[in-house]
Length: 213
Ligand SMILES: Cc1cc2nc3c(=O)[nH]c(=O)nc-3n(C[C@H](O)[C@H](O)[C@H](O)COP(=O)(O)O)c2cc1C
Image 1 (cartoon, protein in one colour):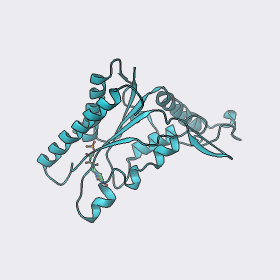
Image 2: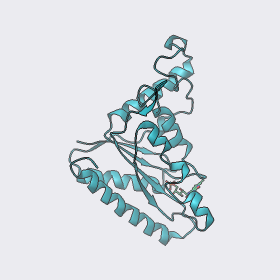
Image 3: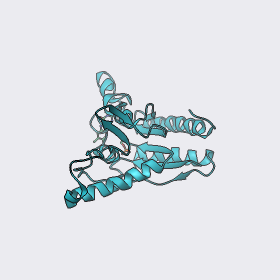
């Protein structure tokens, strides 16, 4: 059985390419992995108030001293962390907005990054605690040409780079890009989506095979 946590970050509901692509991938997983179960998208439950979340387990700010805002932020974070910890696989559909991950996805990371729960940081160093999960990130990109492409067109560019994932222990998330989704016409975008969906099908088959990837 595979428990899949499906997170979508696009501000668009209708017409969202990242939602279309991540939904396609999750459906492909359901088709290939018997008894796989999806727990649904969660980003809308995140908030931007993160006071109190970065405190280490043995905090000098005891729970009794938490403000109502801190309590609310921690409760939100606890709920999301519990769902992440319970999942075998994370499927994230996200755009890139202005050279970086959307603030919704950043809010997700801010809520999920909890010392003592999803990573450990103390005087001896830092290590992630959720590295055993499978992670796929599905990203439609504008696909600009020329010099711009280096900074905006690559899924390995700094905004989506390994740092946020490695921090949590996820060494090598799978990235599937659909490109060009903007500025190249509808035909090019449709072809990019078909090709990204084929890549998603291939990854779903890989995840469906027994054994560690
Ligand atoms: C406000 C905005 C900013 C964007 N910035 C970038 C960018 O910096 N680099 C890039 O490759 N694509 C960029 N894009 C393209 C999006 O990644 C692409 O349109 C994607 O399909 C949007 O996701 P959605 O269809 O799920 O809403 C941007 C799109 C929007 C709407």
